[in-house]
Length: 467
Ligand SMILES: Cc1cc2nc3c(=O)[nH]c(=O)nc-3n(C[C@H](O)[C@H](O)[C@H](O)COP(=O)(O)OP(=O)(O)OC[C@H]3O[C@@H](n4cnc5c(N)ncnc54)[C@H](O)[C@@H]3O)c2cc1C
Image 1 (cartoon, protein in one colour):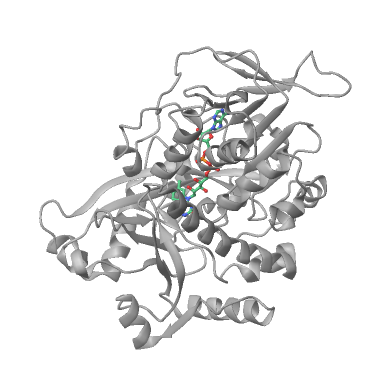
Image 2: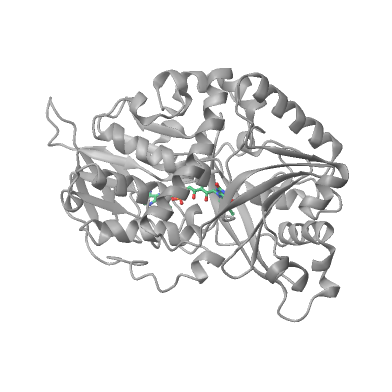
């Protein structure tokens, strides 16, 4: 079942009472979590950023780097600071090395497909560089990752993607391939049929988002939390030369000349023209305390995607900081009931699904038998389960750039549950555009741009799902 097509309904606003993720549990001391939660919003601000996840936080950071005075920027966040997908993900900073190439090629053409994959590698390098340069305390750990093929069917699919990507001129010099016994040894997964390995990393995503926000707030940016933007309408004081926008919230309206939508799955609430093309999916993740067989010097050196098929896969990232294993669950899952599948179509991250949780743990145990329930001590095993809402787009790439029909409004949203491998080029890209740069200056694949032409193509039903 292709969830990105099936949902067909926009997310509305984020629910006000979401569950608390592992990342949020471990950052309750962030001083700006509920900043200005009861304050009225200012009547005017040149820039309004809507959404305080990594997209909104990094766009703000980059605008300031580009010369925008921090006091000219306000951020509206519907809930706690960075309480969307950015504080709820599975911790992977994992570029696609070739796997999605076949599908991207069908939807966007070969040239763009090559650029999409190359951009992901660049994002990983950018995050690595950024974290090192600024000493960001976000538990970032650059290492490698395995695509573990658990079935011959998926091994064949991946082999074809690898071949097609390489033959089209894609760089695979950083990808290592293992088959049979070699794959089993290197991954430690007994069921592995084959495996591919390439550079990737993991991080504490909430710490990264919070660090970015703190930099801007401490320079003078005003963040208003628990403050959903409920509409963006043309201001009566707009002139022939300049359109101004009233961004309404329950605590007043702010007039702005630049509005940036960093609302990911929730973008269509303020931009209903995107309702058919950005749909919410609820994704679920789990924290697992490992037994000695996966602790200390026996920790997993690489992160993994344990893959049965293209869409039926489980992510595994063991944190260097404390050894906790973060398990991501599939949204496309033949092992769970229709009710659990319907949960995936929800935009409500206050709840989680027990079937999805149990299936994720069973799959992990099957791959790492030392983690089976019966073999664990009290205190080992499942620690926490949480959910978050991801923004699926019908053509599997984000919407970035100027919204042509709404002068002064911009977007950086629709990350398909894959934002950690995209936002670090998209948010700087949108900041460059706002500051007068060209699309070429962003270095992003052209297919990411939110053009009328792309929207027309999508209206005609062009689609393709990688995630
Ligand atoms: C369980 C799970 C696992 C994931 N695993 C991975 C992974 O391993 N690797 C990876 O690359 N990606 C992963 N992702 C996806 C990744 O987290 C997202 O792509 C990324 O965080 C998106 O960042 P963002 O800033 O665009 O959106 P978000 O972090 O969702 O931020 C959007 C913000 O906008 C706010 N908002 C929305 N509407 C309004 C409004 N009208 N007014 C004010 N505020 C509003 C929201 O509250 C939210 O804080 C995962 C996501 C989930 C949920």
